[in-house]
Length: 238
View (spheres, rainbow, N blue to C red):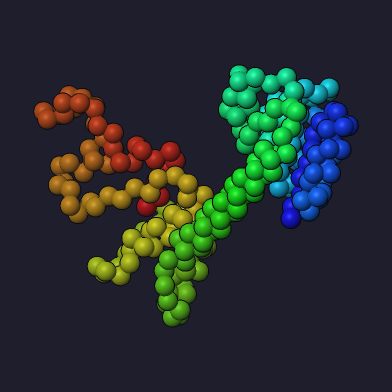
């Protein structure tokens, strides 16, 4: 069904959890301290990680913090015989999926595992959706004619570069679509895509619209205005 890692310095707890999980058809790994647990958790994937709080060498909170830093996506369930509300809240804030007090309740453990598995499924679905959306964005120009293929190849070649690009064409030919595809294929894809219809802006206002202005720069400038290009974190590409 899945793979579970149990990190606990008490051998009796590890043995008890191992028997429970194996009875439920899970594969179980054990670690007797935080350092060993962290090494295992960062070297392979586990569907769920159970981690004690009070342990030698490296306590559970340190393990949890390290797992979050390493971006380990496995749900982490903290367990402790010395827990209280403050400890539970702190562990959840640090990224734990749940907190269970010792002595461990079998039903609570199984319910928590089921909930953690559902979370894993949701995370996986989200990843797949992101990949689907990204593929759609990257190939939003539809068509297989020689001209379309040539445009797609040019976008793939130019997009990752730092070159400035001028897109020309008649109305309705898809200039904005090409611009968006260039943006989606560039190192700036996580930054803002700013659209500016220069033809709709009066000539005397275009400079202010693009670059902004300070309060009092001209008669009607009653406050500071941030220009469209000033919102970009990196140099814009035209």
